[in-house]
Image (cartoon, rainbow over all chains, first blue to last red):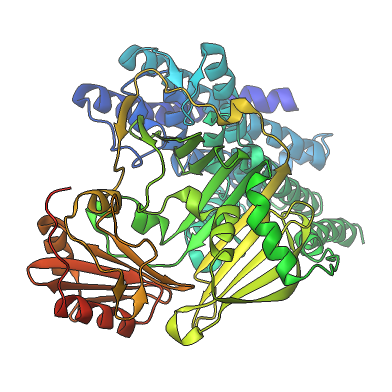
Length: 267
Length: 359
């Protein structure tokens, strides 16, 4: 079942169109910055983008910061929101469940497929950004934001950890969308619902009056991956980010399971 | 039945998770019989306590956005995140953490080095300046508390314990002896009981419900962080400069050629004028403190244009008065009511400070 879902994911043109779009945006930004030789003023624009003119080694981090606020979560929400609701809308969910397949198993297969898309898209963004960054800006030695030098191995480890952290953060989005996908027969509604949650969270994170709830908002620690580039690594927000996403993932997957395994499937 | 069982399990899990922060916040404190005077002495001596800390400082002092003030309006109008590695008062590092970078201050003996990751610049300053603009390291709870607790003419009292940085911290209230002469209502400090390191500071202004300044240590590790944590070597490609005046306040103090009086409108000067004294004067009587700053033509012109009618920028804790004395623009700024600054400006106009030539 899991292999079937993974094969379906890989065979679908939509998967690769989304991945290509995600990779294209940072590439376009890199080309503009390289041609004009004008990076955003330090402290403005996406994280690390002001530093890429000196070295492209950290462009994967800048690329993830570019797609993280909107494009990446929307892509993940579209895929996760479609997972169950898409089958229902196409009228195939009933037939899927007629086979000797438990609902929990089907949900796990959909979850693994969504997880695979998330890791695939984040990894592709990082890999293409590294290639584009080194090609356009070179691979000079880089330093941490704390002013200490990074070896190539140091930088590589931190980029890999960034990919894992951003991927984990996107799983929180995926679990919300997957839960909504079990509630509705419309993939669009499920995806928009997840995006709505993220928009609300992003708004509340910037609102001082909402300070009491900010530590619990799903987007609160997304940009904490920047702390990987401090020396020593500041683990406080990273650990909180991992823990908070674990809670969202656990709660919404449990809710998706409780709903999907007990709902009346009519389509 | 099966349906309700599954949803009940999910609901129970959510309820357990949601209640965790409340339970953590409700951990009891341990009462302490330490006196206010003992706490004050502990705080004063806490500069020798080696530690590593992560903290946040929130200041609510809206200042006009003047280019010459650099990032000070942001520092005094928002929340600042800092990471401190402290070995001794002459060997420490405080990193101001921003979303995408850092501005770090590193102290090694008499040398203070500032690293700005945004423009990859390193600025060195030898020795301490009598006058400069505030930096993030001034706003960490331990540094701020040591400075405020040392204020003379105050009344001390104990506050109940409070959990800070996972510890039960006894509290100390420092209040002005003469509340009518200052905008400061109280300074509350909560202290790590074993070492005396201040963990939380709240500065309240007269009549304000919320503190105007809150500095808190959120994570604390006592002990020597090691020499590597406070060492700094400029990375390749950074620009390095050495300066005697890293900001506009230090520049004005160094260059403005007026000799301000030792006593102004009845207030004594904290640093009596003499050889080597700068152009800025601080008049200081406990929490009743204000600075008088003569400005050069450009900066003075900018500020006079920005100033509202009457020349007063009033915040709950700090009053700023801009006015002319003969042809020179002056800024008077302090934790005092407007009338105190007006009296001082009137005294300056009555007896203008003498011009003492280029410094």
